[in-house]
Image 1 (cartoon, rainbow, N blue to C red):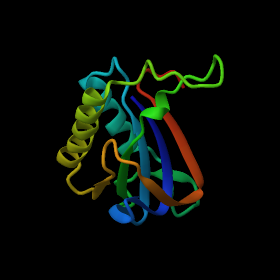
Image 2: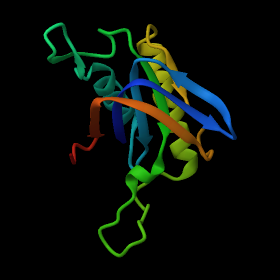
Image 3: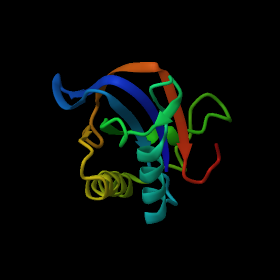
Image 4: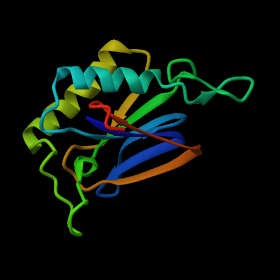
Length: 151
């Protein structure tokens, strides 16, 4: 499982001009599901994101997590995180999960966070839809995660 985690002052996602998910201070997560991902990848990625200490404390040091700052979470599916452009100019997506598994794991990821961290507001995009994502990246702070720990 791969994620691009961005600390935001606000973020929203629209489908056909209508807002389907919107948050204030928190994290925007672009989430990609790999073809070999398991339940452990869901839990590792979700727990890592919620626990990331990328919000500043009173001394200006990145030392606080989403939980510490009562932040919100917007999760948007993005299979293109598994695009491999090492050869040629057209990315290959052979390591991305097929759509059925991608949707299932995306929904299970969101459900896991909602059940495990019920004090976090979680908003989402719509799996498989053409989405417009708007954000104010705060810092900017952007973290890349991979449950296989490739990076």
